[in-house]
Image (cartoon, rainbow, N blue to C red; front, top):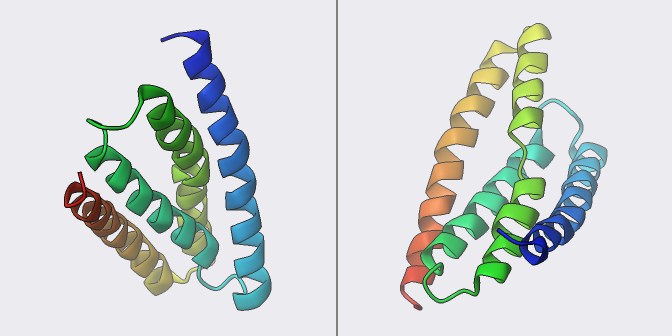
Length: 124
């Protein structure tokens, strides 16, 4: 790993984190907080993108993979916020919503990654 790669990861993260924040804030304003739509949406979108990037690894320059994969997707998607929101839903005693959020996040996230991989794999 070199300084250039670290810089690219930092640049990707500097873009991904604000995108996540803005998407979550917009979702909360429009849809409320009963279901964490913002985090769910960015996690699914990030999974789709990362699945596609994984399929393209053989043809992508390493720097671009670091910028988009580790940097952007790493900052865009958020396991810690997902975990916090899951605990918060449980503490609010909306167990059905908590279970739906947990299952949907895992299943749809993995499916999105697979779809991204399949779509890009067909192109490379």
